[in-house]
Amino acid sequence: MGVLTNVRKKFSYALLAGAILASPSAVGTALADSGRFYLGITGTPEWLDTSYRKTVDNTSPLNMTSQSGKVHRERDSADATGYGFGLLAGYRWPLLDQGRLFLDSEFDIAFHGESTRGRLKGIGESEGRNQMGESWPDDWSFAKNFSYGLTFKLGTSPQFLQTMIGDSNVYALAGVRRVATRFRVRFHGCLTLAWCQPDEFTSGATTHNENFTAWTSGAGLEKMFGSRLGLRGEVRYTGYLAEDWVSFNLKDEGVFVPVRVDNDEVNLSLTLAWYF
Image 1 (cartoon, rainbow, N blue to C red):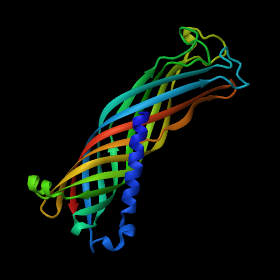
Image 2: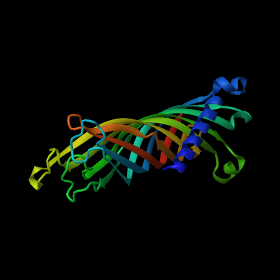
Image 3: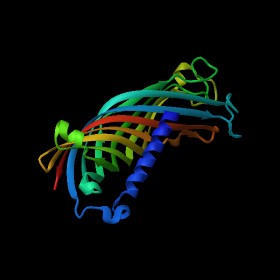
C-alpha cells in the first residue's frame, strides 16, 4: 500500500482518461464504420490485502472512564487468496490503422469467494484490558460478496504477435468498480465503568456492510479462434478507496471507536468472449 498504491491509482486515472478521450466522440471520423458487440464469461484467482485500523477515542468531555483524555490506536493487516467468476458484455470500436487499433468499453458483474482474517491484540494499561476505554482484542474478517464495473481497453494487433501465435491482440486496461463487502468484528471487553472481573466481560460481534469504490489497471492478451471466439488472459491491479465508519459509539460513556479499512488486490483472469 502507501506510495506504490498511490502511483498505481494515478496510472489508472491517466489510462482511464486516455481511453475516454479516445472514445467515439473524441476520434470522430477516425472510427471505422462498424464495431462488434460481445458477451463473455470469466473466472479468476484473486489475491487480496486488507488493512484494518481502529482508534479508541476517550477525549469527549462526557468521558468518565479511567482512560479519559486518552486515544489508543491499533492496526492490523492480512492477506487472502480467493476466486471470482462473472459475466461481461462489451462493444469493440475499430480505430485507426484499418482497425488494428481498437477500443473496448465493457461492463461486467462478478461474484467472489475470499475473505481476509486477522486479530488486534489490544492496547491499554491493564494486562487483561479490564477497563472501558482501552482497546479490546478484536478478531476481524473482511469478505467480498460481489462487484460490478466499467472497463476501457485500448489495444492493437502487432505483426510479430500474429507471426508467433496467429490472430491475436494485446491491450492495456483501466476502469472503475463498486465492490459490495462485509466487515465483521468479534470483541471481548469491559462495558462497565468499574474494573471488570473475568466473569464480567461482554462478548459480541458487529457486522458492517460497505460498498467500496475501486480503480483498476492492467494488461491483457487475446487469442482469436476464428472470427467470433476469443480467449483472453488478463492481469489486473485494483486499489480500493479507504472507507471510514464508527464501529462503537458509547455516547453516554463518551467512548468512540472509529475504524478505517483499506484494500489492494491483484487478480489473473481467463475469459471466453463471443463476438457478434
